[in-house]
Length: 210
Image (cartoon, rainbow, N blue to C red; front, side, top):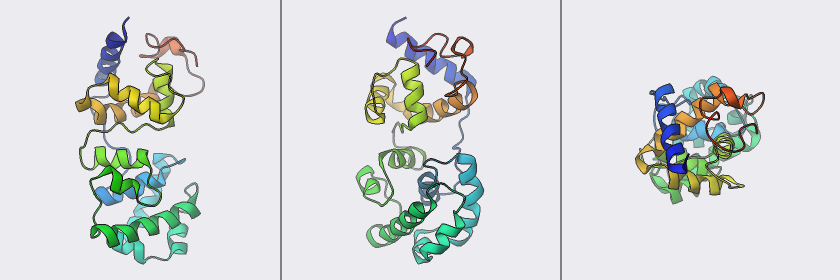
């Protein structure tokens, strides 16, 4: 099977299994999505969705978040991993949105990545899911699956992102990002994985049992 044939088959499997791909983080605009994605680092989406209603009840705008004491933000997100650092970043990020961008989330990679606590992956999620700009956010889970499926030899997420963007059509990036996440959770876990029974690993990649 050529790489192109493998890519086509992977897309077909993902489309069949996950024709609908809702954004897993609860939000109602670009700002609340940005906050949720920042909170999701090293934390499950489920836990983020449990915490954000209380946070957004008090601060669902940059101005409101910037006005909250850092200690109060930390208390509101205390169940989230790395809560002290994330609380500090949320307050600083919100203040810069007010100061630099009129309280609006900029639809620009460089401007987003200049915000405290916002890396390339977070910026990519916001650009893709809030603004519809083609991006291929790669976290450790997508990185693992891309390696497992033989789509990248990259040793870091940056290389894997470049490889996936090269292999898949640009207009599919945003959808594929979510489909791969849902597929990994349902069929392709990091541990206890039976490659022979996986709808994709059964035909993709040389390192199926990794």
